[in-house]
Amino acid sequence: MALITRDPAVRATRRLIAHMPQRDAVTLVGGSTVYGLVLGSTNESTTVIDLSSQALVRWRVPWPAGEETDLALFDVVEAVLAEDLERDDLAQPECLTLAELPRRLGTYRGRRVRVWLERLVTPADGPLFGFRGPSAPYWEFRGERPSVALVAPDRGPQLLRRPDDDSTWVRFGWFGDDIWLLCEDAHAIRTIESTRRTTLSGKELATALGFRPTYVLTTLSAPVDGHCYKSCTGLLPRG
Image (cartoon, rainbow, N blue to C red; front, side):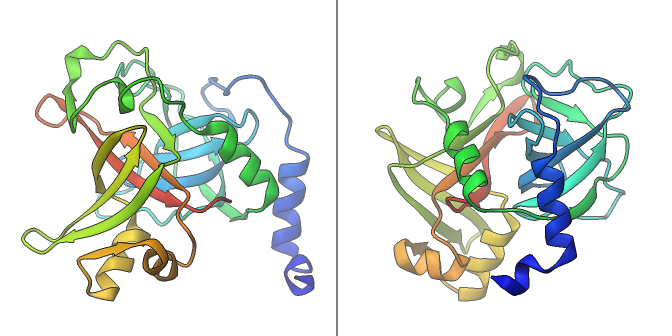
């Protein structure tokens, strides 16, 4: 541990977070500099904990064509909001557009992250995202529900690989529902591919991932043929 704390990059990241000005709400002013802790990232959006408000936010990152996201779990990143935040998407009300690619500053995890994640867990107030099944028509959304949910499963999660189409799925139980989601977590996909297994769960999954998955990060996609789909964009440890 002593060697880690002597790392100037680690010390700088800790200082940044310790002295971060705290706000009651997410900054919504175009051109502002914001900071986030990455929980999951795909080319469609990156889900972060906004470090000033500790709220869950989704960023639309302007990745160049052909370039895949390189942001990983618990990366601390600095970003600049676009002048037009594009906050008119009723299916993704907490999604903000960035002006440019975010800058990775380091990584951060530990007790404070554990507290943040515990506070952000989605309560059981009905089906995930307010509807059953894998998708809902875009025109049914009214901007009243978030498009990201941090779920603490009461059973699982289980990682599955379908050989017929090489897709990866996450299965878990949540307040009586048996939920199957397409997995878009690059680390989880690489993990099950490297094991050459079709199913991973329990201790085997924890060993393969390098941590015990405590949370499932779930998001709603942008419309595909008029429907928004649920997916898993991250398997997360306790912190």
